[in-house]
Length: 375
Image 1 (tube, rainbow, N blue to C red):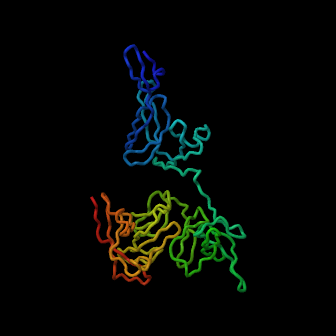
Image 2: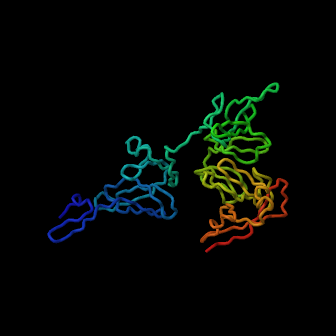
Image 3: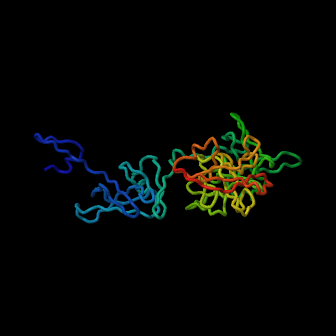
């Protein structure tokens, strides 16, 4: 009696004394569970459209395409997961489209974030371009500008002649600085509000990593007994590479991470600052391999990453704690933080001080003792 077009809104119609409820047209919302795609509420007009869907089986995001199963309007719809690598943008209609098509057809919505999908179909949300930052700490040939208190840089210097001071040539922004031909030095910027950048003396440089304020492509500086150089992290790893033999290594997987133990990595995106146990069984940047399942405390801040010495772990400046407690990600919690750790459905890992371990470098080593699950 009433055509579908006429009743395309949700509402009530009064016919005499009868009230007829009118259901509006459904909105196409495909669902995905494993490789099974269900075109919920999808109709013929949704054919050939693409949608971003969270897979119930792995909680990853995928692009699915809605299709007609036949030529007749009453034939059911189907949808399929797309597994090819491509980038997609959001549209005004609430679905997505290939970014190239979006550009050519004005289909992308403003500067909204896009989704990058790899071969296999897993899609990750790109950083909103409006939030992208560029390096502000620079050297213009005459001096430093745009630097903040606590910033670190790698600088190339020409040695001074006849007792004259060294002269800054420029910033070293990526790996390969050993070929500069001059001296490569670690600089630190201090002072508020007037910031000045100067050379860090060799005796004040600790082995570890420093956040590189002068580079985007090499976001960290690595310092060891041979000096300091930027770390090249341009290659993106498809998955965490931590296997127990490469602790202390930085790699990139959506964000920069550091390996702590076999199967354990720590993102270095500012949200995970704190103290963490790192396995010292194998040799790494922070020390020789101990050939035993011993752990040292790694201090992670937004500017530096170093191994803590015994004096930095002492309780009230006098004694080391025999037992320390961490979560399954090896993050160490103090006694004042136990309410954050000892909670229901949480595992607490106990580490015990290894009082017999040799520590000529004044590092306190701990071993895993026991684990308890709070229920």
